[in-house]
Amino acid sequence: MKNIILILFLIGTTTMCAQSISKNALGIRVGDNDGFGGEVSYQRYLHENNRLEFDLGWRDSNNVEAFKLVGLYQWVMPIDGGFNWYVGAGGGIGSFDAGENDGSFALIAGDLGIEYNFEIPLLISLDMRPEIGFNDNYSDDLDLDIALGLRYQF
Image (cartoon, rainbow, N blue to C red):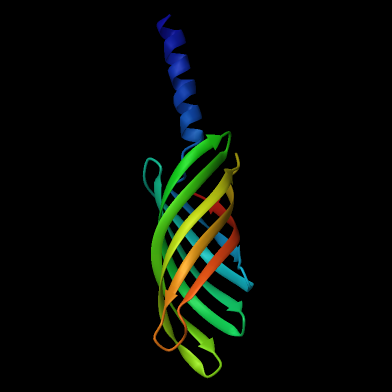
């Protein structure tokens, strides 16, 4: 009887570990709402279902080119199987080139997405990141950034 309980406990903890988020994930995040953008993306496990995400990227949209660095704190909740959904908040900084108006900006961002954790160390995600940018030389902007992410987990 003790062996059966021990085996069930080990199976349960193994199953729970399979659905937990990885310690590190590195990859790309590609998309944008009105042009094209690409980012190098890094995720770092913090505690249970919390992680940090850092994205360094380039965006080309509506005659504006921009580089930006965004940091997000995310809460990850399991759905079923390898699926999770997550929500987060954070901010960032960047610089832009809009013809005669060049400059830098700050932004605050939210994040809402769904991801699938494969049995191999691959994570695929689709998320929506509303961003509000602040700048004195260029109009403040609300941007809805929708992107597909592919990350290697280690």
